[in-house]
Amino acid sequence: MFMPRTFPRFMIKLGHALPSDPGWSNGELKSESNDGHSGWYVRSRSFSKRANISAMLGRVAHPTRTAVGLAVLIAGYSFAPFLPHLVAAQLGYPGNPADDFQTYYYAALVLRGGGNPYNLSELSATAKGHAYPFLYPPTSLPLFRQLALGGMNASLLGFQLISFLCLIYMLFVAINTAEEEKWPMSWRMVGLVSLASFSAIPMTFQAGQVNFMTTAAILFAWTTARRSDLRGGSAVACAGALLVATLLKTYPVLLLIVFLVRGDFKVVAWFAAFMAADALLAWLTIPHEVWRAWFVNVMPTGRFGVTTFGLYPPSAAWNQSLNGALSRMVGERMTATLGPFVQVAVLGVTAAVCWTFRRGERRGFYDLGFGAILSATFLIAPVSWFHHFVFLIPALTALAAILNRSNLRDSIGWCSALFISTSLIAVTWPIITTHPNHRAIDAITMTLPLLGPLVLFAMFAVLPFELWWRPARSP
Image (cartoon, rainbow, N blue to C red; front, side, top):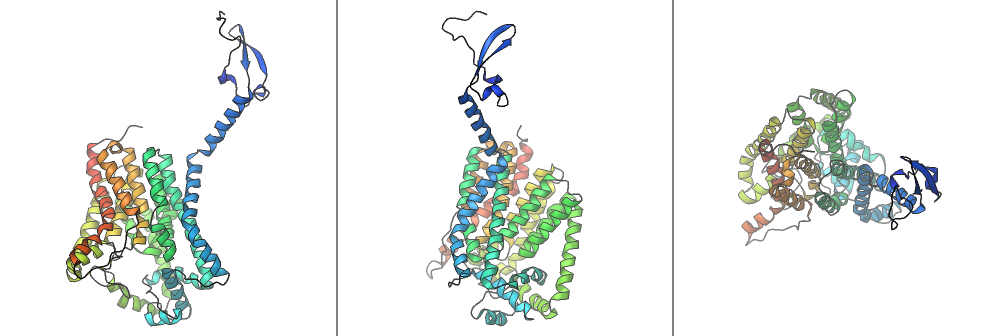
């Protein structure tokens, strides 16, 4: 074989230098036969190090490992400011337990003492001061009463640690979906920044709310539904997750609409069986006067234009549902009249959106269904506080997943709308109080945070019609 004098008398062939080859790690020169010609192959330690580093980076950069690491990092960053206070309380230092958790805890104490947790006088007497009302239905009481098994500080610590683990799972599902489905790098960067600065996350820790547990259960049901045929154990697991979410926040029961439209009746049947068992347990263990108090005093106030039992008027600046927006703009009396029509209209649009996709592929249908229902639920709930924005994280994830699989991924308009919606939902909004001389302007400015959920819901409502005109993106 002819070789010019300027070319070395050996050949470097990296393709033959495998880490499993003993000659690779010895830095030796090895002569072999190659098509009848003799050649020299250089086995260098530097190549070995580079290959080992590349292999290591390949393992570290696995989508699941990346998602776990980022989820733990963001969750730890969000939880870290609250951990010293929890530890200090365990050591006997005075603290200020989260307001909403206090309500859960004192309601559990009242119930264990044979009292009525829906009686504000009993609740305040147990708390030895002001306490917010307990509004969850009696079917949720068997779950909440477990909080009274220990002292206030120990119970709060355990509660917040469980919330922290649920937050890690929430973030993992969102980040892993982006990694596995290969979202554009710009989307992933915006998503990570939004999750790291999501204002509702520290608000949930500060209030001691059940938002993380509820959202984790919703995400588990979503991932199960979009990846399996919902037969056997997967149907049971999905129904169990929906039950937990419903007992903790009630409104996730609307997610059953998605399964009814799709025809996954096993999930609905298992959910009904679990709920019946829970209702029977509550009926046998909860005094009947407690049930009567909820039906008479609490349930009638859970509608538009009416002040929720023991809470603020629906027009309060903290309420970012359509109930709050309409109450501020047209008054609570008019809102009470319009409320049922608004709720039916929003749910009707949502059901129609799900119906149009009922024969589509499983992943796309459940992405659309869960996202539309969750965004609609935020809008039609009687009260949607700022920390409830956490419930929109699955909806944002589902919407991005749909856009990524279609040609809308290259649409400037849709990408901009997704970015705007994500930013408006994640940002920290100031609390604006009304001024006697600027009531009309203040009513509008107090409703600005609702723009994010409104844009999100509008995107889900328009999405099926847009996808009809644009085929799925080629892999």
